[in-house]
Image 1 (spheres, rainbow over the protein chains, first blue to last red):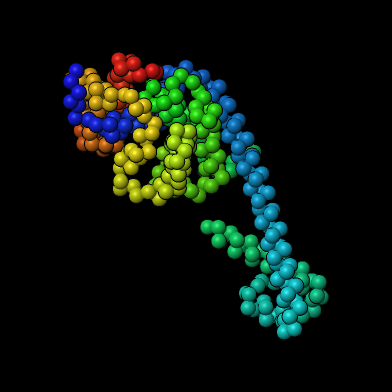
Image 2: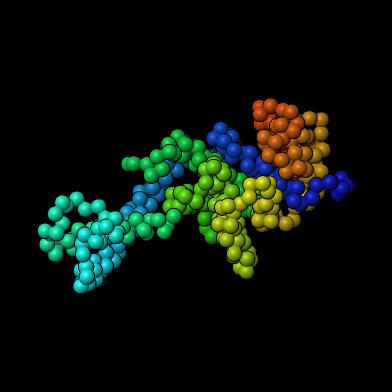
Amino acid sequence: MSNNSKYNKADFIRFIMSTVEHESSDKEKAKEFLSSQGVDIDSMLSDGMKRLKRLQLQIAADKTKAEMILAETAKQKASEWVESLLRSTDFSLSELVKEEELIISFRNIEKLGQEDIKKILVELFTLKFLEEQAKSKK
Amino acid sequence: MTNQNPEISNDEWEGIILRLQSYTRLLVKGKGWFRGNETTTFLSGKEIDDYVFEAIGRYLKNPEKHDPAKRSLVEYLKKHVIRSLVSNDLVSAENKTSSDVFAYENEKEDEDDSIPFLDSILPLAEVFFEQEIDYKEVMKYIESEAKGDVNVENIFLGLAGYGLKRAEIIKEFDMTPIEYDNGMRRLITIRNKAAKKYDIKK
């Protein structure tokens, strides 16, 4: 056979890759191909789904751990921020509420003690920093 | 257990696993067109499952990297993750200086879909192919075997000659999806005959 095909190596690769795509293009074609290769489909799927569940659990656990670390970091940052605010001589809670557009569900905030204010502000700023972290990740 | 991706049902996951298993098996040990031959163990001691679940794990960790508006999840995993993982193992095993292929996965996340995909991956796909195959001879054989079967001829021409996709071939050559699938099945039989004839191990 003479070596005068109009197709080159790139065409060959394109063709083979197309056939590979075809044999995995839907569930039935994939099953057909795997069966022709002697693969036990039921066993493969059973093992595969178990492995998937393990992966999902592992990733969920890693995510929870990462979120806890982030929350701890944000809380630490908020504590330091609030400490410095409260040390400031011209600190006014009502001004801060307005400036930061904070939502505080206490009617008489002037009557709150220093520790209560600190606790509320740390919680609020922790949430604020967490939101900022979430936004910056997007 | 709650599903981390509630939009993907167990039934859909089964379909994804089947398709990825099929694709990776073809890529890693399929038909001898690719390197690897008769073993499920590939480079770096990896099994087919390892590639499949590494790809799924990457998606589960960063689902936002897949844009459903551009392509289905399984297409994303096949074309953007598994192929990168396999080719990276091939390249890093055989050519340490080219390990930057790993960058390919990220580069292609936002690929311009106006460029035919198979054309865009040709330089990368080349690494999968055995250098000793006489491509021209094999293609000529496939072309001659397809002769007389109009649909098979047209599918071969569309795929190899023009780089068309399934839907484009169906439209261009005025065939039904069933005719395409049946024709493709016959073309794959011819491809396998070519592998046997040219002693490309299956």
